Image (cartoon, rainbow, N blue to C red; front, side, top):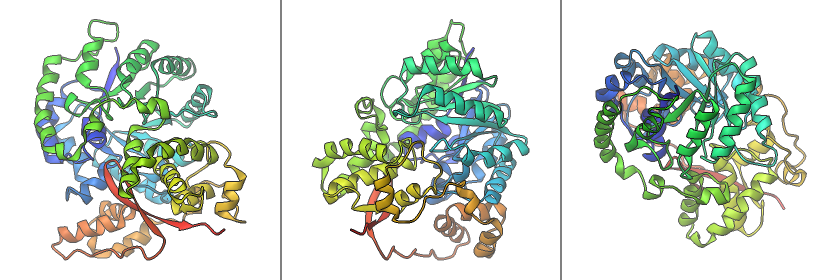
Length: 475
């Protein structure tokens, strides 16, 4: 029997609907989902924390706490970006530990922990904190394709995570690039070396995800991730109903009742209609360009949107050709958040400026400096020299350079925070949290100061606009 983690309440709406599903739309269906027999329900983490405060005017911490009242039998799961938690930069260890403890207190049972660079040092604090809190730590291996990423390297990483004490392993194919053949090989290799359960997470971007799942299950994978059909396929996961039906009357039968699943899907069709304004047709259908360019579907959209903003859509082919060059020059980082945005924006600037590496974002500089962790491969010396000058990259774990931060941010936010959860929200998203707290208390919103220097570019992450400042490199 294969087990299923349903992602509708997190990755389903994050992938397709800009993370806009409200908690109030989850409550009416929560008990029905709880009765289905899922391995877990992914309900929190990723972009949901930011989106709840920024766009939905919800206290992010209320969601798992509220859902726990209705979901009593199925573990609640969240996605945790290692030392980045649910944000986009590294946070001090004391904030990571406090966040995990409070998340368990709020109702989270399983933490899927990953690092964008597969740098285990950036996962250790979170894993230890989860284990100390008595929750389930699922260590993730980010799957990507490059000359230095081999199936053997992924297995070795999984073995190291098992040695750290994780309760399960997730093969995390966030770009949907894993072929059915590779899935079969990798799962078989991991099953030979590991004793903990293995979960496969992929996306339907390229159109082959259901076949990938089928081959992985036949190879022995224990858990697969799916989303209810109104929130499935496209850039999300394959539909729960489709996969359940596929395994019916086989040795892998999930035991789930398709008629009950249809009742749940019927409910989500109504919710989906409310959220359609947040999606685009290209996110709902297969994008086979990812198989040619090896670029995640979401990144393709981001690049096109950046060029459209600059009235340079005709440069898309040049930019797509530039992406693998930039990626190779900076050590083949996996093209997942935040590295997909960092590499993609650099490729755009290299093409638009007419001179490669003339301008560099602060984020790219920090990556080359080692502030995101250890790059998977070697960064070209000439690029290092151009970006850092005589400055040497750091080799230490990035969080070792950070002072404890909880007490400092607690003092900074003062009476606007009602409790430790609020302090953590502020630590992760200072501007967003402050505005949320002020709205909550009926106070006037503050307008953040606009950036004063550098050129500003608009990029898209999960369907949302963000601005990055870039500095011109000295000649």
